[in-house]
Every structure is written in C-alpha cells, then in structure tokens.
Length: 290
Image 1 (cartoon, rainbow, N blue to C red):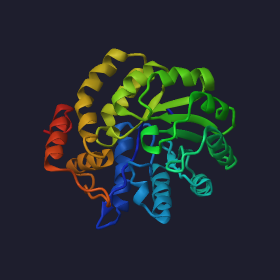
Image 2 (image 1 turned 45 degrees about the horizontal axis):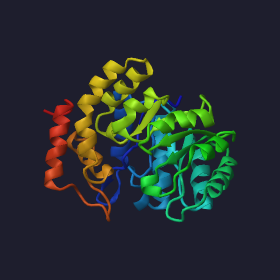
Image 3 (image 1 turned 45 degrees about the vertical axis):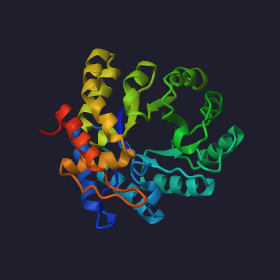
C-alpha cells in the first residue's frame, strides 16, 4: 500500500481561506496522473499556519475525495504529545490510512523522550510514519532509536529527510526489511530507493505527479537507467522549487498549471521574479509547460 510517489500535498487558498473546490480537484488530478498516495497537512500543506479546525478539515476532505482509491498519510505531528494524539485520533476516525508524525521540534527531546512520545502515539491504533527531518526539527532520531520504536505494532515506517543515503541501510539493519522507508528529499529519491527505500513523500510531485510516479515505478522495478533519465528531467525543478521555501515554489508551479492560486500565508510570501523565472525554465525542461 505504501509504495511509490506520495505528493506532500499543498493546501490551496482563495482569499485567505482553504479552497475546497481546488483541493478536491487536485486530489482527483493526482490520482489520474498516477500518484500512489497523499500526505496532506505537512509543512508543504502549510500546517504551521492552519488552525486546528482547518487542519482537520483538510484531512477529512482529502480522505473523502480520495475515497479509498489511494492511501492517505495524514500529517499529525506536534511538539506537544497530547496535541499530536488529538490529530492522530482524528485522522483515524475519518479514515486516513496512516499518520505522519514529525520528531518534536523546538523543545528538543532526548532519544528517550522520542521513544516516550511515539510509544504514547502508538496507543491510538493508527499506523504511524516517523518523520525525521533534523534540519527543521533540530532533533535527529538515530537508527538505534528508530529500531526500538519499530518493534511497536503501529510504528510502520519513516519519512527520512536527513539527506543521508547511508541511513537507509542503517535503518534496515535496526528496523528490519519490512519497515517502510520513504524518502523525504526529492533530489536523492533515486538513490534512496537503490539503498532499500520504496517511495518518496515528494514536494516536486505537486507539480510533476506523473513524472514522479514514473520515476518511482522505474526504481521499484529495478530499472534505474530509466529512473535516472526521469531524474535528469526533474532535477532542475527540484532545485528551483527549493530556491525559496519549497511549498511556495510548489504552489507557484501548480498555479502555472492552472490548478490553484499561488496564495500563501504569512510569514511566507510569494516568489521573487527571479525564482519565478527559474521555476518556469525548470518546468519547460521537464516538459510540463511550453
């Protein structure tokens, strides 16, 4: 179920509010383009600036629109364990297939604190992907800690955004080969799967869902030559999207495809003209626009 390309889904806005119609259209478009699942209300979905009610609304709308056609890994992270449990319980109640739970940011728990946090969340009863992204959360869950958590019934995998390809093998040793490893970094997703990963929760897939899905399918079939050709088409887009905050680049790219506005919430602002030009050049290189 949890293999391939999972767009870290943007949350479209219209006049400051969540644009339900655009969001539903995006879900249907991604399914038609071959995406293998969704990861809504992560950082790319602007979770830091969504209210709790909006956060839950987006999860519910994505689950309902996907209607079981492809799985939904709902963003459910917080640096407050009780709050994360609330999000996770809601995701379970509305039918999400799993929750994506980031290592608690800012308050910097120890490795023992991480074990306690995820052990509490395990009791909710929804499958959980650990989201390890030290550049944003500061805390790094080491492979030994992940291995201890992998023994829990509902800790089934990781979104690994360390950028360290050696981690995939290290985590296989500590967590076992059934532990689901998804890349959280588009630029290294090809190599990540070569090391034992099985997919990517992808920012770029917002803009290029078909290409990202084809890349993942090629790697999972062992056809790394074809996957590399696709990655060469996508690499300028990966770079352009992350020139400024990635979700802003992704949302601009989707707006160029006519799928939603490029509106973001403060403290984020729209792309500079230079980055817009870089995005458009990369989208032409990938064959997404003329």
